[in-house]
Length: 330
Image (cartoon, rainbow, N blue to C red):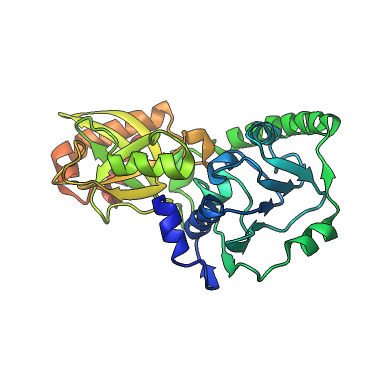
């Protein structure tokens, strides 16, 4: 029995509230991983990464709304190839994950990475023990229809048009410059994440991304202390080598995991790792765009302040003086 199944089994006989997206995600995975009987997922939208949250997909029944911008036709095909039985319902808004012998989860979360994984959506759910919900009454009330080749091709076309528009919108969203960020009222916060030696993802990080996201290892990671970062932080990472700065990039934090002392990635000074699961294009826009002007101003500010002083400061919080230095030269 897997760790997910064991942990889930401890709570399957009582009603409980799932207060966070992480709790919803783990409960959905645990529900379907441990179930022995019929399994049904009824969701409005099926987005990118949905397959990561459906362990043992063969035979699972999935009901969704084929709406462009919400449901991804490429993901539907992947799921169908793996044995998921999909039907369509227009104007579907409920989100329900049901297992005959284990119970059900009624939640706000759609079946996507944005809702259950690396996104910044705040979700809530309620777990109900087996026998508390009549799945046949729900299914008979919503008027399902089978997936057809014609409808899936139409969804292809509409989804493509939506993606083109979204790419344009994302480019506009990323247009926020450092100066624009600097002048914002209550401006979005970010943290620093310097490094000076190359490391590797720890075993805990790779196990988490493999079990929860079906990704062999995190896209990016940073050695840190336990309190340096938290989920959903934006971290401006960069390499310090002597007095020079390089590899300036954004890192969104999805998880912070501990590193075992026996792990080759273990560092006594920084015994934790902050991890980024997906490539940057899977996340909302960062606080501002890193353009050549910012790289030059950031490097100059670092030299003026001194790399030793930067290392001696709280490594995660850019000081007002440091930010002012960057703004002066931007």
